[in-house]
Image 1 (cartoon, rainbow, N blue to C red):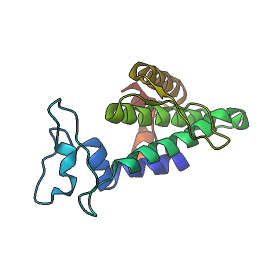
Image 2 (cartoon, rainbow, N blue to C red; image 1 turned 90 degrees about the vertical axis):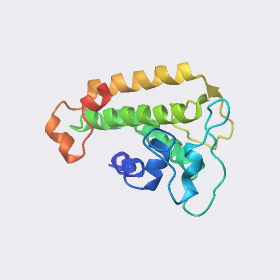
Image 3 (spheres, one colour; image 1 turned 30 degrees about the vertical axis):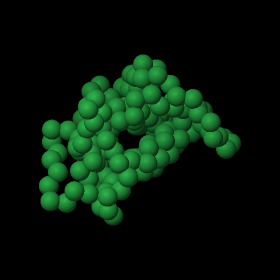
Image 4 (cartoon, rainbow, N blue to C red; image 1 turned 180 degrees about the horizontal axis):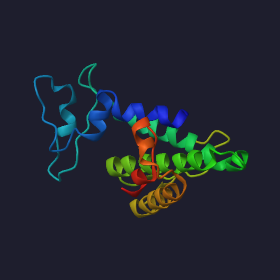
Length: 171
């Protein structure tokens, strides 16, 4: 499933540390300062993410683009739900799409605040997007995770096979 493969981006490389741990109590700048910016704050305690220091520096635009491309897949799957009618994989597929979209928007809103909220498939070139408020984004995240919870399996043994279960959506 193309949605499962994208989780590798968050959890299997240095980028994942930049986007999930750097800038927290779990990260300290060591000898290589290439990602030190993720742990720097201005006088208002806002993060200071600067341009690349060197080739090891993780670029924030990659994170943004990846999340929105991943969400585009989710929107397409959700938008074409009728194609899955009668399939034994319908609930798992739609549940995963809702979970993934909620997961991505949670990371995006925590990193950037007000952001564009796109929940429909984009079928033609689009260059103008309106930012939604954090409140609107969090409502969508909750809606997606509640929908996912109702569709994903409760079989906890599948979690060991890299399946997302309803218990992940409950967190």
